[in-house]
Length: 139
Image 1: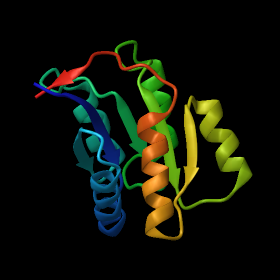
Image 2 (image 1 turned 120 degrees about the vertical axis):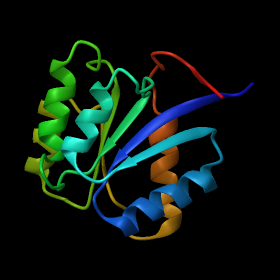
Image 3 (image 1 turned 90 degrees about the vertical axis):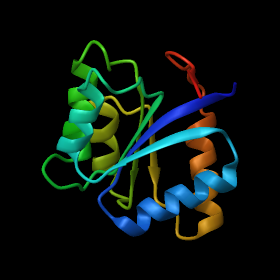
């Protein structure tokens, strides 16, 4: 039996979904990854009684139906989700967006790197940041 992190990635861009998954493989930390393409789908999964507890939620800011900041605010207002480690991973360099993300409750804000090696290091930072899992996930 192995302990595994349970991560959900909310990202509408298929290329970035693939890059994140490939970087996750390179990091080599046991992780179960769920990928969703919009904010409404993310919140439905997070609030579903059939869904396991996620240790980490990684959000893009610009998503259809509900953006990453809206999702983050909703996560922080839900007593069952409020302590979930939440990361904004975006292509934006705007300091106002970064401030808004932290105001909404982001634990970590990262700008999507330009090359794959830097992306691997960003994923490693997400998975090894100073946080505690709510519950270990076993498989």
